[in-house]
Image (tube, rainbow, N blue to C red; front, side):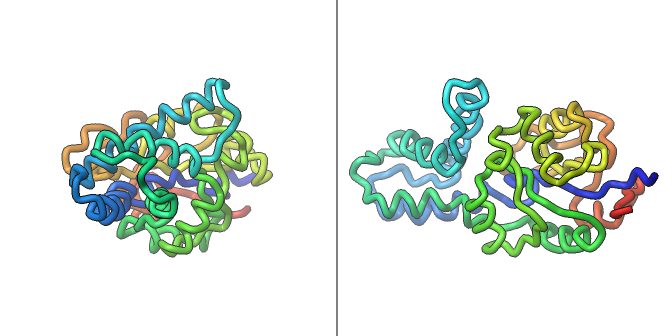
Length: 246
């Protein structure tokens, strides 16, 4: 029996799309409508993103029922605004919702659409993200991402790196974990996937957190595949990525 990979699952924020530039772009427009606010869109994006993992950890720890990421982002936005001189209670709700949906309007990295399209011709390509389904669907339409399926936290009712996020996704695809490969720019995500039996592929995104990024600049373990970008991954260079539906 062939042991080729039948499905590639992708981390999305940072791996497939450039969240920092997209959020900063919309944050800049929002902050300009508030002249008294601190006008630093990149700092705003970083501060908002800084609340991302802690807010999910409350859910992962069982201190809160599963809550979709859009809601967590909205709460984190309200918590971020005061540090930039804005009282969220004084901002019209439609403006807050528009900014909250910045996460739905993220641009892909230059290689993402072409790489995904090439990979899609040979196997299943699906999102395995902490983003909720509607967020990822809107993002796919905006960015032209050719997913076969949108899976991950909301479908699994668990946030990465909980094992359920990976294993429930494999169950939904009706595939054993060893026939699935997680593609991510984050070594920690790949380590958790490997512990669940998935294959792993590392694609570095050295500017995800801006020009001074210090983390995830290189592979930290002997991942099954390492590629400079998704186009190189699709070419199967180096390690010889075997793909197919055998």
